[in-house]
Amino acid sequence: MKDIYKSLAWLFFGACISTLVGLLFIQPFEESSVLLLCILILLLFFVASGLVSKLEEINIKCKRKGNILFPARVGIINLSKDDENLENVSSHTDIYPAEWKKEIEKLAEDNKIKIKVDLIDVKNNFDSYVAILNPYGGCYPEKDLKNLQTLNDIFDYVNKGGKFVNIADIPGYWLYSISLKRQLEATKPIYGIGVKQDGEPYYRRALMFAEVPFMRRLGLMVDNKDEDENYKNWNDVVIKEQFQTAGLNITGIQANRVIHAKRNIDPIIEPKEGNTPFFKIIYGDGFFLISLLFIGKDFPQNYRMKEVIIRVLLELLKKK
Image 1 (tube, rainbow, N blue to C red):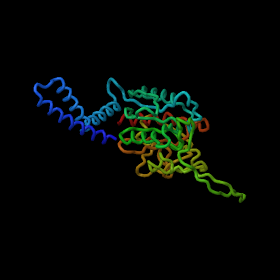
Image 2 (cartoon, rainbow, N blue to C red; image 1 turned 30 degrees about the horizontal axis):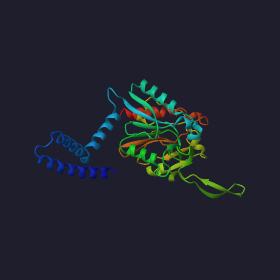
Image 3 (cartoon, rainbow, N blue to C red; image 1 turned 120 degrees about the horizontal axis):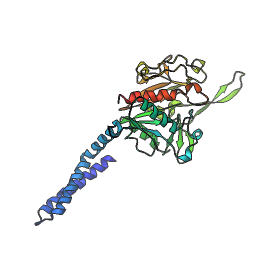
Image 4 (cartoon, rainbow, N blue to C red; image 1 turned 45 degrees about the vertical axis):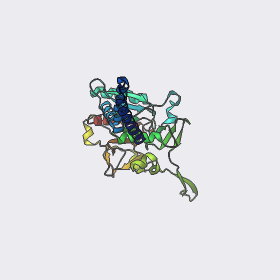
């Protein structure tokens, strides 16, 4: 679309140049008409040459970094009051967007980091925010189910240097349709036939995490540890050394889902048997910060992860 606009701008630029030359040969020519045409030619040149786009990019980068007068901004995705019932929107978390906002502001102030935290709609442009946080865990609000426009906006934002934080569960496993006002699975599960211990067959439902569009774009493979007692209580949690200065100290978590820490994955919680439930992954010029841990009343040992996620994000923003 931008290329079309540039082509049209060059077309009108050439037409205006021809018109200007014609006017200059008319004696006496109207100075006001010539002046207006020169201004129009200049504007068309800025658009056609891409200077306007470059200035917009510079402006966005300045807004992200912040300055003395205007601090960097963090956006927290927030649905309207009509959709505020968290149980209908979120997956494996019960912490409201306003609670995240309050906690981020408090910890930023304690660490003397100047940021402004906004509750934002997915219809907002993400580009002016240094980081975006999705407080709905394994679900995110999608404005266009057919084209997954919100998902495209998220990945485009990160690719251009943004930071996106997913606070719990498999990112994007559920879509919350803003138009339908309900959750939908992002991918269809596969059903097979299993056999119980007594030999009786039953329908078995397989969760296709790797086929979730969010996960597929990042090339992530998740291991489901719901039945693995070795992961039920992760008492020997070790935070990566670079984040220990952020004052992090967790003694135990329950990790129901983990990811294998391959070369493109930077684990925040040191891996156990090569797996981690909390990590950073580079995408383009930005990164995703993803926690697979459930945060809710059924997993009270994981509530401390709210503070951990925020402290890690603030530590990373200091190095932006």
